Image (cartoon, rainbow, N blue to C red; front, top):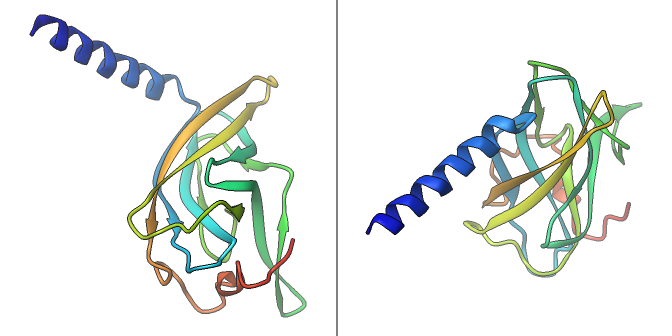
Length: 162
């Protein structure tokens, strides 16, 4: 019994230390669930950095390609493009949301079903060039979750190429 208690306390302490040492706080992470044959989806979350940081890359075991994307209006047309990095100014929350910045999961290895927990790794880089990887668990939500008009994600996975 004592060994179990010690192991539990060590695990909790290690988890608390990992959260305390992390450069960012991640809130409300979610991934849009997919339909059969869909090969791409988006991941969304709120990121708050303690110091000026940027997300320089992302990966996930559920996708062959993972990129940070930006959606923006250009001459009355919603366009999406990969960005080399996403700036996270110190103390400001950056929201990755449908119709804006998001993590694009492409070449999906299988469907993402509502309720699935999707693992994401975000690679952060500070001003000093030091890198840190933050692990995120994002719950898959229904296709229409948080979707709004002009969201632009309706076409993802339906033949959309980047």
